[in-house]
Length: 474
Image (cartoon, rainbow, N blue to C red; front, top):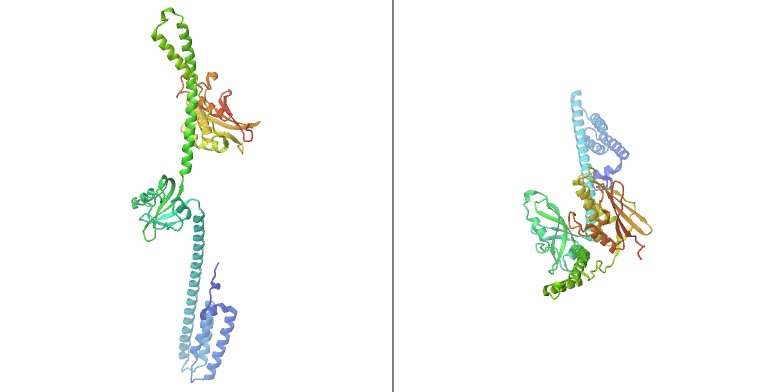
């Protein structure tokens, strides 16, 4: 940190301040003695009393007020002894006048020294603040340039003022092409619209996901965080951080599409199974009716036989409930963390609670994130519907691991299941929806090499999901 002593002394006062109190005291004594000797030697012809101002001025740079008053009095007495006076009153008046001149000059120098010291401290403070500001600017510049997110500022005309390399890359600016001054109205219209908002609303801060356009016309999805502000001159500005979210959106939509196709395949397999059962019964009835002589040769009856055979052929076609997929390792702890975020508001709205009993380190499992999340959501939503009329609304979720298998159990305080044997049958009567939730959830887990089972517990309804642990895949 810079101090007053570190400021160069280029003036007489500065050199005196650097001399030290002891040296100044010696110098003052020597000056007083020399002036007194010279004044005594000059006699009454020449008065050297004005020279006593010099030691007072030197002393004012280091002496206290009491010491300065004492020195001024000594100098006034010395001056009075060196001149002849007409009367004692005249001598007194001359001494008071000299004392006033000496002490006035000394106090004036004291004030000058004080002001100079305050000025030096102020200059040092400004230098320190400037150094800190430059250091902060360098750090912020380094942070902005090293950030993978696009960071830029925009003026009131929606023109880019500053931007980092990530902003140039996100907006598709080639190296060498300046980005400063480029309008964002066509690149990120949401930022230009934010600048048009009523200025009376003050500072505006928000986050939004919107469409953006690169300089070459290619579109992308941008997630932006921005805020408006005003400069000291009153000009409106906008600072923004943006991330190209296209890859994440594309991956999410592809995952959703794959999961939708898998679910449709599972439902189609369930429908095919039910149709085969009905076709088997219809075919049996048709075979029995063929024995009746009255229907022999009946064209409508023969056409019905053709339709039954066609329907049997359709129903006998095996629909694959499990598509060819490449499973990977999924962080089960992360999936359960996301599940907590999703289900907690719904349980809170019902005055219910979700208790988590998880180990410090939840193992990875073989699965797909989207399918696993859907299966768990189906189970928690079933539990929420089951506890709606219960005095105690509670769901307990816990995990375990044994012999290469990871279990996730969902135990709620609902009334339990009346007919466990039909739990996983599709299209059950009396279901709140289509009766496919448990059927689809078990099919998803089985497609990962796991399973879903109902395990009765006294006073609880409990479903347990079984999954292959990481490293246990065959």
